[in-house]
Length: 377
Image (tube, rainbow, N blue to C red; front, side, top):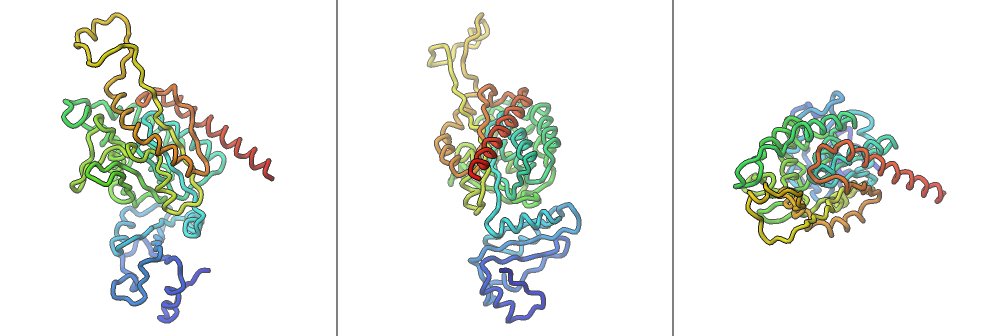
């Protein structure tokens, strides 16, 4: 049941506030923000415990940048906001408010994460739609494109250019903070997402980083999009940490590489998860407890298998979260785990193979799901 106040009658308005389980607060995004009387601290009908949804109505088909931040500044406490630019946005709002929302969660995994693009192509071809998006590391980066409703082919070209041509990990430096300076990675994210804040994305979005200052998992829903994507993908030792407001953030994969738990806590009824777990086994064919001199490494006639520095750092950062990722897989109603053993964490040159693997796996999973549904009928 929807209670609607159109006349401003005080008694009716108070009854609406008493009876409502959820407060829907519509506003024209382009207007000067002004508060509802009920959100003021002294108002007797103030209902702080009820979910509040700020509904921003945009004049055109595009989200007005900064509108969400301006309107949200009037509120304290928990508040969700939704951008309404067309009929599809109204349908999404109805699903989210009524507890029937569909969430998409994308895991981190370096170059393997490009498989997300192939799986997303298959999902869109099958007609799947999502109402909220979350992710970690490269899953967060690709998820931000989904949350901004970019077309799949545009995302493939954008991220191929960003990760393959752009080589964001190529600015090597004296390893005082990390092996790279992080400037190339930051520039790549700035060029890809511009001045967007997380609040400006068309769909609700979050990304996860690891807070080394205490508290572990940090979930980011507000602020500069490029900055928190940079934090979510800051592989310890490879990229410098992101330091913000006195806190230190690194790659979210250390604590939550597949944040289905965060999406479930948001109340999404159906979660689709794409996991590209970094289950790479580092092997060696030498017996060593210390590295040999550099000149001996150069003079070796036969190739000796040793894990490289970057591979060791990346793999070490992922080990701790593997058991938890298995539990988080179980929270997804639809799970994709494409076979990616043939692609290394930093093998960006294999971008096409990663996309194809994600696409083929998703096609197979969706076909199995359809066959199971036919059997149940």
